[in-house]
Length: 121
Image (cartoon, rainbow, N blue to C red):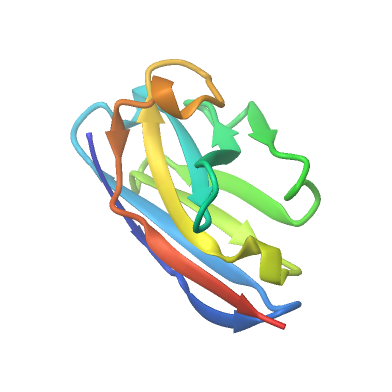
């Protein structure tokens, strides 16, 4: 599966942004999809993960209640709705595919190239 992220940009604190992760390949609905982010000098962290059907999700404490992950298998797309953005959300955001439910980047075999989100104060 190949993944392409879009939707990043420069926003102000408190704004909302929706990221999209578009997939190609025939087996998209068999993958769990995770959104990760990496800020300069920091490790890549999982912020949201969704299972194949969209019925099971994970959120990092830092985004819980503000971000929502969802997927549309017919469109082969996973979304990350980000509300109440904070300057500390500034990072490169990546989506990735995994054959099982995991919050560990090392378990993900396919990655997009990322999209930058910058939140100004």
